[in-house]
Amino acid sequence: MPRKKVTNRDVINIFREIALYLRAQDVAFKPQAYEVAAEGIAGIRGELADLYKQCGVKCIDDIPGVGRDLSAKIEELLATGKLDVYDKLKKKYPFDMLGISRIQDVGPKTVFKLYRALKTKTIADVERAAKQNKIASIPGMGKKSQDKILRGIAYLKDDEGRRIIHDVLPYARGLIDKLKTTSGITHIDIAGSLRRCKETIGDIDLLATTSKPTELVRVFKALRKIDEVLEEGPNKLMVRYVNGLQGDLLILKPDEYGAALVHFTGSREHNILLRERAKRKGMKLSEHGLFKGKTRVTSRTEEQVYKHLGLQFIPPEIRVGGDEIEVAAHKKIPTLIPYGSLKGDLQVQTDWSDGNGSIEEMAHAARECGLSYMAVTDHTKGLTIAHGLDEKRLRQQGHEIDRLNKNLRGFTILKSTECDVLKDGRLDLSDTILKTLDIVSISVHSNTTMNKEDMTERIIRALKHPLVNIFFHPTGRIVAKRKGYELDMDRVIRACHEYHVALEVNGSARLDLHETHVRQAIKAGVRLVINSDAHDPSHFQNLEYGIAQARRGWATKADVLNTKPLKGFLAALKKVTKSLSGSGTSARYAQLHG
Ligand code: DGT
Ligand code: CA
Ligand code: CA
Ligand code: ZN
Image (cartoon, protein in one colour):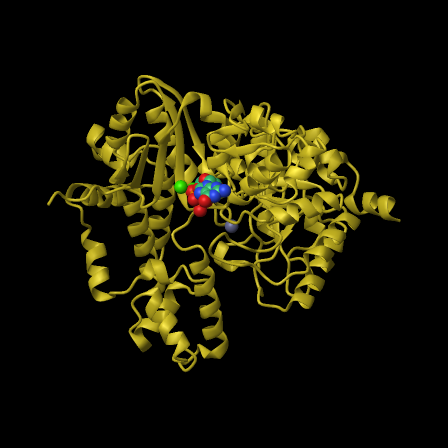
């Protein structure tokens, strides 16, 4: 039997799992090295196997974050399909470390503890043990931890088999790039949930038109990213890709393409409402077109289908089957914030705390992505696991930023912070140092199990602080991983409006705010910022997912402050601080709010 191809995903997962094993044993430095390498691999475009074939271990060495030691390990994996250190770990500790530690609040040490006490090897084992009330009696665990684990597992299951969009979109684009040069092809597009930019994706739906269907099928089946063809017909293929995702490729008639694109983009709920509307207008809508009796009214483009239904064009991101069709009938769908329209990024971590890049590296990467400003927002001292900064180091960082800004043309680094909100709603840094910053941003990282009332009070107290400008990842959720803390978002949104604090739409795996809160915040007059939350130079790609998230919440360019050039942005943020405006923040705030 031929050995299975080692994919980037395999290497990433193995490295992440090794890091977890090492973390559980308190090994210094090494876990981070594996994690950083995994990040680096996640950021590359092609397949490691191809790179390796081209120029050997030299090319692997060049991947950001992959050191000499680990490139040798990657080589071992690619060449032999196995990795000795990993196999030894797995033999000694035969449990699904990677899987079990995906459960919310279950760290690698807990996975070990569970295994030692109960021999739990899989998530299913852990679930069974929890249901049999066995976890509660492990020393140091208790009933509360057991309940939390059960909730965490239930949350994971909701998303079983689905992948976060960050992992799927670049992959699908890689497929499109390969297919679009096929002879005879006239259209090749992403449809389904991926085109709608949902947070998680069930499968990759591709639509195509071509004058040479057999050629397209041939090229498609030969793609290295395809693991197995599951079903094959003349116009439809269903496959499993090497990353484990499934996908369809549909080959359509060119004159039906628009109607098909509407149909296969979905959502199902949106399609149902469209069909009902067609019916009310004496027509019938299907994937083949919009019909009046036997005559086809239209089908060639999506725009025409919407137009003949008396509707404005509805962007895919908001085709959810809510009120979008009604609003489109009144021609009231706003122009959503365009992709690529951000000028700055207000949440960037560097190697001063838990990021991988220096301030300078991050600035260069941001500029490469077309930005003209970026705020450095390292964590603060309360967050010891992330090497948070205290007042003294933040001041030193300020000097470093001044030094760098002198040498940068057409790009500005802003002094900022991701200041931890303490348990009682006070901030983790003194006002004296906060006043020296260009922007003060806050977030909650600790004591996240408070009840709703207390958490809301805690956050509102922080929002009231006269120096605070932006509230980062407001609900604490992480897609498919963590639900977020209990919070009264109505009250938080009102407070943001009252105290002039902008809400963040975070483009990392958090995708926080949720789109319903984006829409709610806009209605309440709260301004937004879209940030990457970059911890690595490659993470500025997150901005695109942040924009998608904001679009799903109906945000326009005007709703998002960092679509403005630096000056306009700082002016709009209102509470402009000392180092740029020359006037103290609190004085300005007192002026504004009496
Ligand atoms: P996913 O794959 O779970 O992330 O979500 P979708 O929306 O991509 O769902 P999928 O792949 O099953 O189907 C793609 C689109 O095709 C879906 O959004 C709407 C359309 N579609 C598929 N089956 C049906 C159906 O039975 N009824 C209707 N109205 N539309 C359907
Ligand atoms: Ca799909
Ligand atoms: Ca599908
Ligand atoms: Zn961080």
